[in-house]
Amino acid sequence: MKFGIMITKQWKISNKVFQNDRKILSVWLSLRKYSKSTYDFSGLTETLIELCQNRQLLSGDKITQDMLVNGYFNYGHLGMELKRNLVTNWWDSMVLSREQVFGMQSPHQLKGNQNSDNRSMKLVDVATLQVPLDKQDTNGEGIFSLKDRLKEYIVLRPNLLQGAFCEYTKSLNLVNRKLPFGLAEIGVCYQPITAPEYPTEFNAVRTAEVELASLVWFSSPRTSGSWLDYWVRQRLLWWRKFAKSPSSFTAGDSQNNYGIKGTTLYFSFPWGKEPIETLVNLGDKDLLREHHGNKSSLQGRDGRKTVIPYVLSMNGNLDRGVIAFLFDSLQLIEKVDSKLRKNQKKVLKLHPFLAPYKVALDTGKGPTVELRQVCEGLLRELLEKRITVWPGYLETMHLSMEQLAIKYDEMGVIFTIVVSETTLENGLIHLRNRDTTMKEMVHISEVRDFLTKYIQES
Image 1 (cartoon, rainbow, N blue to C red):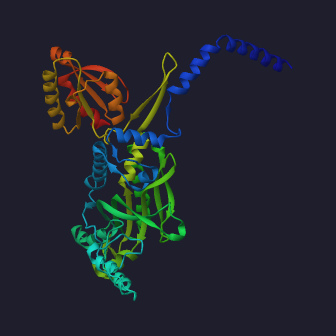
Image 2 (cartoon, helix red, strand yellow; image 1 turned 45 degrees about the vertical axis):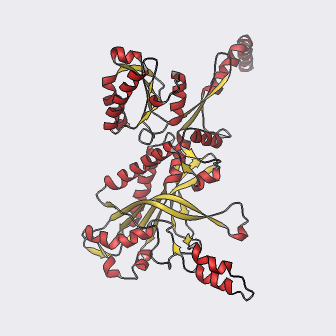
Image 3 (cartoon, rainbow, N blue to C red; image 1 turned 120 degrees about the horizontal axis):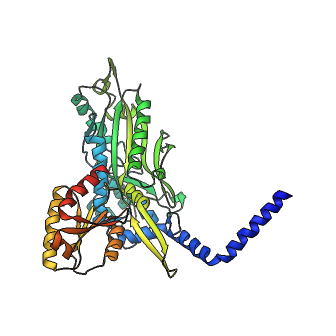
């Protein structure tokens, strides 16, 4: 009973305080609600698409969710730089940083047609079809002729596996027939996907042109299982290394159309998980089939033993990876000003290694010609250090510091440098950090070394 009385008294006191400070509490709740970063609100996909189109990350009249997933989009100027940075980092981590992995390049056309299935991308010369299509008869000769012409096709690769199979024997001699080793390649592939707008009974398919990053790892059968576990961990860590929310990248067991089990790495998009990389242990059957069962030419050394290697295949979809990092980096911050008006701020907090441009150079108040000359000199210094720079000083429309911050935050630029009259007087420039939003005055002679150190340490 005493305990119940005590609670009642406390509730009356709390309620009285709440009644007295209701207005203050209401404002505080509003600020709390609209000042936090939001990731899962409805319309996130539309917001990102609009931002990417406005800031030249993606191009196209109308981009949909289906286009993002399947690669039916074009890159803008900044998007190409983002993708190039992703490709460079993949190559550096998989090839240049490892002594057992070698780079290669294979043709888009598959060697022979016997390994293709009915869903493979096939090219047929239009000129060879014109005669049977134009031929009008009642005996069906045109149809039979068309079927014969359709057999004369070229198969385009759905993945980069066969190229590595063809290069295997040459590479085996390069490593003195010692296992394990890997072959890495980045290239465009043509993958069939089911068209969602058609009923399943029609089995209608479209072809997606995607850029894949492939590592084919040849190891002894004895160690293939442990190597697959190793590569799953390495690949998941690599994707997470550049993410603001590493937990958005996950791994799970999977099985392909041929019943081969493996592991798939996923990214959690607003509409659900989508695969970005697959890792499977193919055994030795495909390698033997490609080389017509010639075991003597395929055998490698595992210690003192001679074995035919098992093949581990890793395929990452770089185009989907770009979209994943755009979603991961997008932060929407809604704030309420003193008049309780809502304002939304969009920021692409891309990892410094992935950001299309590390620095934006712009001008403030002052003599235009002199300020541009300073910007041009600073631009050359930064480019010598391989720091990408957006030359905002070339634009004719002058923007305020707040407008510049909005623009470059949406472009994912890490640092904004503004050269002004102060720079001409004492060498000080305005430096703003995208991630901290801090603004400081730095001497122009110190900027290059500071930015170089920041990017390297990130």
